[in-house]
Image (cartoon, rainbow, N blue to C red; front, side, top):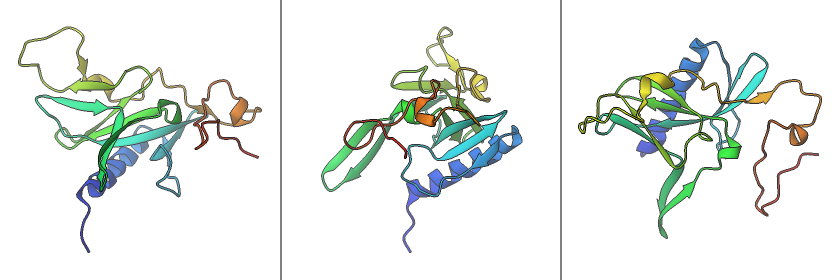
Length: 171
């Protein structure tokens, strides 16, 4: 059987994310499908967090975290921006540091660089140090457990759009 290299890296990232979240006291739930916008759900203190996991290697002393997905098929290369309303947090596993970093995608625009070493240019201002992203960001609100309102009416939650562009509704 032929191995799919990017799939193997993704699986490794998910395993590291599960371990790191469990060490931080989160319950970790896995969806029964690969077709959701998130890879895991973390649960702690009455809140659920939809977690998108990325495997990223460091380049030039920084870990690039683009908020897009890319693929190639017989029609060429494609890039699609991530639906930031469909996830709560990015968990980025970097094999170069053997650590997971947590980024709130709603706080950053298209890409964020998590710096692991000093820039060659000597830049010191407006740098996102990777070490500052080792825990769940305080800006991430998650979905409250046990809410009396249906998920669609919960003010803290934004729903993904269906194929017709309308919000997804549940019976």
